[in-house]
Length: 314
Ligand SMILES: Cc1cc2nc3c(=O)[nH]c(=O)nc-3n(C[C@H](O)[C@H](O)[C@H](O)COP(=O)(O)O)c2cc1C
Image 1 (tube, protein in one colour):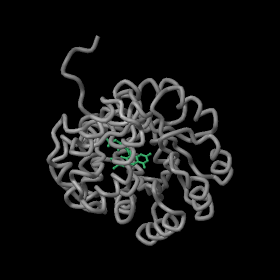
Image 2 (spheres, rainbow, N blue to C red; image 1 turned 90 degrees about the vertical axis):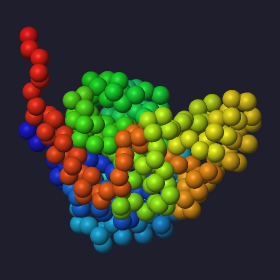
Image 3 (cartoon, rainbow, N blue to C red; image 1 turned 135 degrees about the vertical axis):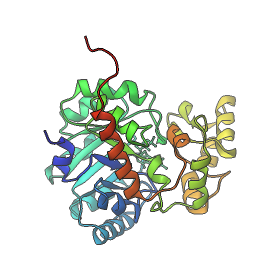
Image 4 (spheres, helix red, strand yellow; image 1 turned 60 degrees about the vertical axis):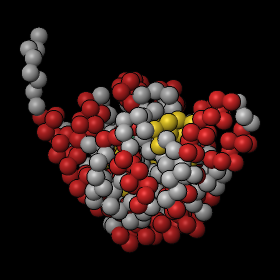
């Protein structure tokens, strides 16, 4: 039986690059597509012109399929959708919200749509609206997060929808991929692992901070404001957590947080930047080329899944 996601999208391995704002750009996107996965441009924070340029750069660097992630909290989404349509991008993922109002135009143009969902109810709604698949993302993830864990969420979403499910959050190697497939997912999406890759256009200090991270190195801030984000612990996130605990006004929180990811990605600001990363950062010890990450992952997952069990089967 062929993998439904690979068949639908024309890719070799069911491995997505998380559409990370400011991170999932060239040359990272084409590296993932060229290695057999699906590179996804993170359009969050981009102008429509910049997205158009990134699409052109990706097309120059690969003839393989790729996608665009629309970060729904971004006020420019309607213009970004126009760029996606006019450039005939084959696939879109959506993050941090409900993409209902864009579904008709995207589906009408034949774009495959995979919304990121943090809960079963949204997965069901997306399937009804015509989503081609859903990305069930657990709270282990880097960036904007929900509350449910990948381990608990993925099988519940798998049971609730008929479209293929991609698991995201806490996956960084073949063990994680095998676990996700065992839970019923048909593919995986990785953010933090690809952030610490050779091709990621990210400040070296940010990558090194991911390598140095331990299992408890991340924190979620912004839950009380309805915008929870997981980042590495540093001066900024400790201060934001303190502000929340003290119940300071949202404006004070926002004035510190705004532009945080840019400061991390472009300036390598380790103390004042938002070093978005998932709990899996503690598992990442080496900056590797994307092709190596993908090959090792696929080989390890296949080996694990081909093992039998070492206990009697009733
Ligand atoms: C730096 C960073 C930025 C991210 N930005 C976005 C985004 O703009 N849109 C989105 O849908 N997801 C975003 N994510 C989530 C990833 O796409 C992916 O689902 C997540 O990182 C998977 O979890 P992992 O980090 O444990 O691999 C971001 C994650 C990180 C680490």
